[in-house]
Length: 140
Image (cartoon, rainbow, N blue to C red; front, side):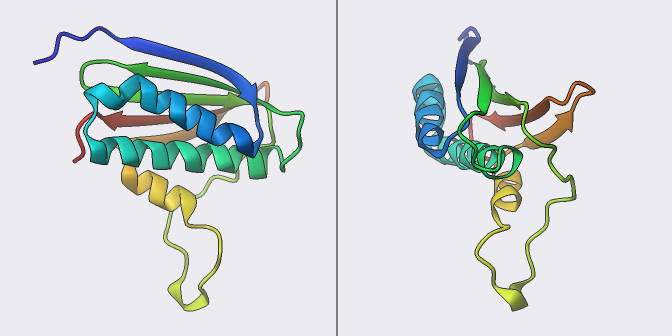
């Protein structure tokens, strides 16, 4: 049993596509030694999909948006949190898009939800969006 204490990472970065791999790399650096390869890949997939959705949909690829990122690792799991002030996410249950009309987009959040233990979204009364992902350090 690990006696590792919690480790935290905070980032404040532009909501632009070039920063997605920067955030993903920081998450990787924080957890790679304590996480099995499959779980690490699954978390990185979910982080990439959430951030890409924030950039493309909440900020509509504007260059003036910012994202606040917090990642906490403890002995058993990682919690990833993203906060932004972009537009609201249109909530609906994640589902696989129809296969008869093969489309280019729409699979990301479905796949992200399948890859992690929890993926949630909420918007507060002041207009801030909150995405939270949790993932056990060993793949299930």
